Image 1 (tube, one colour):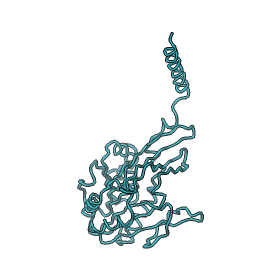
Image 2 (tube, helix red, strand yellow):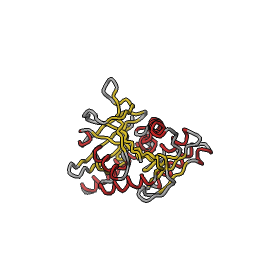
Image 3 (cartoon, one colour):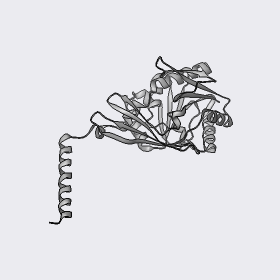
Image 4 (cartoon, one colour):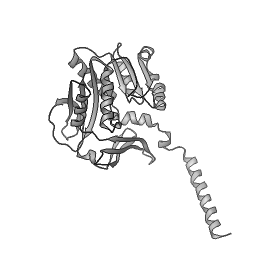
Length: 289
């Protein structure tokens, strides 16, 4: 037998042994995990988000919001939380990804009671084209609207949102920034049973284009790499507010997160016009029609 053939046989044999050991161990934690469950646990805090929206709308308009539309809704987790809050609350969740919407129907909408299910509608459509009943509230969270990387596109989207709101309607967005947002870095955070890794893999300072990923790591050392992938533009707050004004919104307010004793975010958001420079910040933007 030639040396090349011997190496080939040895390689195949080693591969079979590795596969056998893997089969004996059973599936890894990563192989058993559901990326949508991991995302909801590590990224979203729908209870606090809906608290903020509910309270702010009431304070601004003197009444409860009834109909909420969630753009770029993914699994519609936030909309489900909305319809749970009040017996009169109704929600419309819009996303282009039919597979993710179906997951939301099966898992999130599926866990609602019969009355709540009647008050929620999941719509597979483009947020630039979709036509829905005019809503009290439209929200675009988790920086999802940053997929519009051209100014004309973003203003076009903001105009569509304004048209989709009732006369007293309010548009809720979030944003993040700080000098760390311009860096190519990874940030790891421990969650219940897994680690969440935010990966800013690429950043172009000329166009503002970002390539970001979410990875998950487990105690058995298995991983889900690039569980989620995003290509965004890193928009600044002045740019966003200027585009909201150009789209016809009468007013926009920045709600800045406070800090705890260690300097970390405390989950409390207050309206501000001036903020301190920070390596990494998150805020809400509240735009009134």
